[in-house]
Image 1: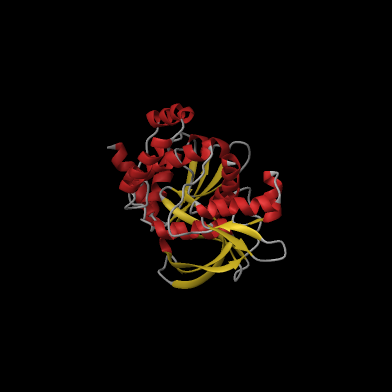
Image 2: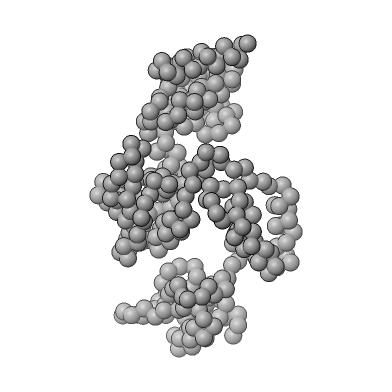
Amino acid sequence: MPGRLLRLLSLLQSRREWSGAALAERLGVTDRTVRRDVERLRALDYPVEGITGTAGGYRLVSGRNLPPLLLDDDEAIAVALGLATAAGGSVPGIEESSMRALVKLEQVLPARLRPKMASFGGVTAAVPHRGAPHVDPGVLATLASCARDQEVLSFDYRNRAGEVSARRVEPHSLVTVRGHWYLLAYDPDRADWRTFRVDRIERPLPTHRRFTARELPTPDAVAYLARSFASASYRYTARMTVRLSPEDIQARLFAPIPGEVEPLGPDASAVRLTADSAELVVQYIAALAALGAGYTLEAPAEITDRVRRLGLRLAS
């Protein structure tokens, strides 16, 4: 009995809604047994809500109290690592609460998982992203829950120029890059995918309208974000021709390029660098030049002047 209740709880936590028939099939029991087990979970303060309809069903909803969560081994390790590194992230105000939660988790961590957790703790560290914008943990939670539940999301968005527009999107996923959080979503009003900086999102609200998930035009959210960065045009743009293949460039640089790299034959590449910061563009120009291959540079005067001054400082 306890084992079946735990399996039922795990299923209810794995997705938003289940039909009674699907739960009975997964558990290998009758619909009547599922109904009895649901009542037992409710008696243990798990807020399991019944769904009306032709088949009927159940879903686990938010209640007054936080009931215990059921995590498998990989999920437990992932949560512990996330809590351990939260103090070095870009979400302010959660360092102390993260440590308290980590202590509670470690107290109940099964013995078989402790060596794995200890091995991570000895060789990992979090480097804070200085200068990265702070984001509201509540905003992140709202975006993540709407993406998980496939619920249309509305919010006000402030673009780079400071202009604010009302948006209504189908959220797909959250991605963090160099301390910045981004929401990847489909915008029906623009009939296209869009990325939004989370620190520029204001007043996000679930609309309680469901949508059917769309297929990304790239293998995953990270690949789409990289393509979006490459095709964007920011305040400063420079172009370099480097006598290396794109694979050699990406393999030898310390971080992904804020732009696009295209092959110009087997041993040459066209590199487009773009960013709102002139300093960042110059840093990547210097990094590419330091690879030791021949190159040419096309850039506005503000960029080339900075490159010359940097060269003089290095030479001196």
